Image (cartoon, rainbow, N blue to C red):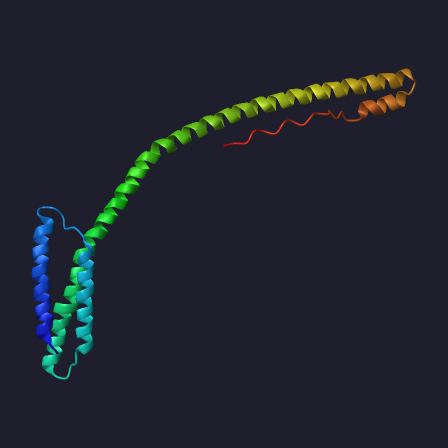
Length: 188
């Protein structure tokens, strides 16, 4: 295994990262740039290439492979995490802020909706009482008309001398004829 090539590459990358970090941060949080991804892709490809070239036939090779895992693979994973974790954290924070702001903006409208819905329900209940009262009055009036018609018919039958038919007419139940109420308005 050719560890020197890998170690040189790691050292060079570390120096480049340190220089870029000094320039990029200057008191500000580290900024993600496209070149970071390109460099990570390059170093990842290099690590994968080196991993494919590893042969373990001795204890020394075994130890070198262990160091490669720590210095190559784990270091690469750490660099990826260092690059993307702040972005992920910022996105999660932005999502939380967005949700909180959305809820803060929506809440007054939801409260207004509840108020108006409650007012509409109260109005509807009051109108339902009025409608029922009017329907009952209409039914009572129709019953009185039907009773009056039955009495008039019975009286006519009696005048004609048909007393038994008059009594039958008075025993029949009075069925008032009521017009159907208009359909209620649709609810919001």
